[in-house]
Figure 1: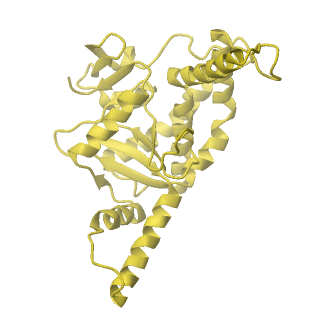
Figure 2 (figure 1 turned 120 degrees about the vertical axis):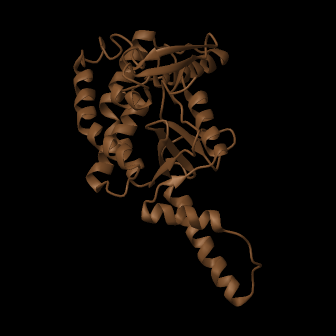
Figure 3 (figure 1 turned 60 degrees about the horizontal axis):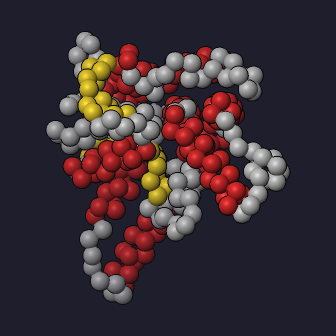
Length: 289
């Protein structure tokens, strides 16, 4: 996780954080310089990327840091240009792909397929074309390859979404974790994957400070909400529907259209933080204890 993002969560000159370790169930104080990284994490011995990935990530961070600083200082996305939004989208999909959780997910998929082949009496390393059981070093190499090749395409899935900035109420704080981009689907599909970036109902969240979180909402879902409100208002005029309170939905659509920062309530923040805990690999950080 880039230090310029973690720095927003640090307190005082020492940029202090409080970290919860899910594995050991312990809370401990830390600082930004000691958080969110692992030595040689992007060193590749399989696909020829070597150590160049670090340089590419640093270049992207240098371009994006001023954009995030502008959002944090103004607590608004109203002055974010189309080019700056595209940079943010690229940054978010890269962040989604660059963590340990991303590697764990890749390893879990490979293991699940291997186990299924073995259950049916097959050999995953011989009986399925273009498939084999992957070693930890191969998982690492493959994840670095994906990080270098897929974000440019994934970015388009975010650009098409409705862009929002969410703000905590007083005395509430967003967490950030070792996998800070979290996904949630309002229309889950039974027995199927629900968290694809292009699925209907998907929403992407990325906390950028203890008080601010970026959100990318499914455009199809918002379009349907717009149409329902329009049809409802037509129905009211003709007397074919009963009056009901749609103020929350209308408020959300107004905030999207005008890029007004959305003020959350405590339950919203609790939900956001639960996603950070759920999607994290091991560590969750907060500006408070």
